[in-house]
Image (cartoon, rainbow, N blue to C red):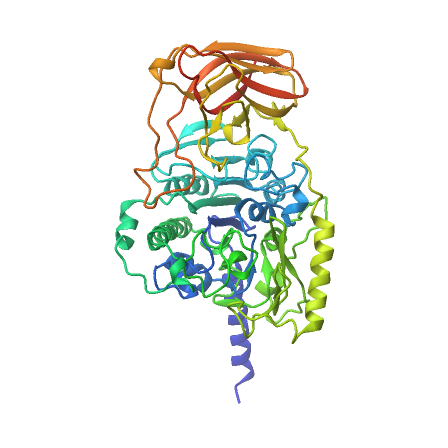
Amino acid sequence: MEHASIRLLKLISFFLLAALASAPSAGAPNRPNVIVILSDDQGWGDLGINGNRNLSTPHIDSLARDGARFARFFVCPVCSPTRAEFLTGRYHLRGGVYSTSAGGERLDWDEATIAQAFRNAGYATAAFGKWHNGAQYPYHPNGRGFDEFYGFCSGHWGNYFSPPLEHNGKIVEGSGFIVDDFTDHALKFIEANRKKPFFAYLAYNTPHSPMQVPDRFWKKFANNDLAMRHRDPERENLDHTRAALAMCENIDWNVGRILRRLESLRLAQNTIVVYFCDNGPNGSRWNGGMKGRKGSTDEGGVRSPLHIRWPAQIPAGKEIAQISAAIDLLPTLTDLAGLRADSPRPLDGVSLKPLLLEFQPAWPKRLIFSHWRNRTSVRSQKFRLDNNGALFDFTTDPGQRHDVQDQHPNEHRQLTEARTNWRLALIPPESQDPRPFPVGHPDYRYTQMPARDGIAHGNIQRSNRFPNGSYFSNWIDTDDYISWDVKVLQSGRYAADIHYTCSPSDIGASLELSLNESRIQGSVWEAHDPPEQGAEHDRVKRIESYVKAFKPMRLGVIELKKGLGQLRLRATKIPGSKAIDFRLLMLTRVP
């Protein structure tokens, strides 16, 4: 029998080791830092740890091995709704998000966000990458709790190599491959705030199209025979898959850069690192045999990896079987950090802290709803009721192939009733979005009015049917104009800059910007006619718009009065065959 003194020594040693494990690293704050990494269009299956032998993702995989891995974590079928649910802990329809462009991606500005909770607690906050929840302040990241923002607000960007981006509302030029660039800025933020707690949100925009990736990552996949294929191989575009996998390996390389920097700064022990993606894969490729892809409310369209590493607190290698969702991240992360969520409205999500830190926590049954374009499915721990009313048992049918409603009538009835009630409570009646675009918020100098948010009148056409990343062309008549329904939040003087292209034969067009009784005019006297960009970097032909290197031109300074109106840009004179191609109107408050 072990001597009592030896047992006592062992007990003391255990508690000392536990205290050391939970203590912050030298120089780190007592409260944990938080880094949330969100990939775009990746899907559950694009990770080595989930069984995909087509690629290697050692750094993302290490987050699961060194922390916790959620087996059944669900997001939305597309980008902006998932982002809204992460930011608020509430289903996206509650916050006014119903589309991915033209204003429907905006998160209502009276919704409280996770960044506001952390900033109110004294954290430095920053977002890097694709925002996709509104461009005009206070929809803008700087209006949602992020002190620092570097990236773009659209849902799609047309070029990934040194493109135009923005830094806290001001247009800047990116440097190098876009995901590498976002990571560079995140690393600078981490280093600058290493002596105080920080919250960093890295919203990478890959492997979303266009399918662009640096040569060093593409070379591995360019002629690679893929060992693992989509469940219906004839649907798979192999070059698209190869490009997506190369982009995922680039993401992994950048995640590795972040993890190494945390180690070098001695911050790793007390930093929570979260990794997930925003929807199912953006192509028919290997995804664990699941049904559905991006845009679908089936399992493959909404299942995402979720890895959470916090060496000071979360046991390494923990696997969590309970279902969870993007709505859970706000309550979970604020709870782990010891903060109040401060949401003025009830949350739909719950804190996953007991699942992360307790051995066998009591955990209630719950349902998770997935919705997009009037299609709704509901998931319990065992079943999914799909949009068409079919019931699938995921303990025996992970590929969602066999309807079992006849074998489980009670579960089918209960899930059907739950889905009906959820739709009645959350889905608004079909109507036009009543929210005008805000201009001139008193707390912010810049207001961007992109072509994405504008309405073309007359002959003017979009460069592509997908508004994100598009521009306006075919401006051939003085009756043609572009409009935005706006609400000026503060009266004042605003410098108006037009981002345009114009051929030498078309110079001399006169443009007028007006809002109610206010108007200014200017003429285009400098030709700027670059070719479309993007195809030279695409690994696969895109379906979205190509872009141009648009040039800013000062149209003038306009006096705007507080209130509602229709902001219009029209050509009063077109001496050539057309006026301009238009990408962006930037309004900047001036004294």
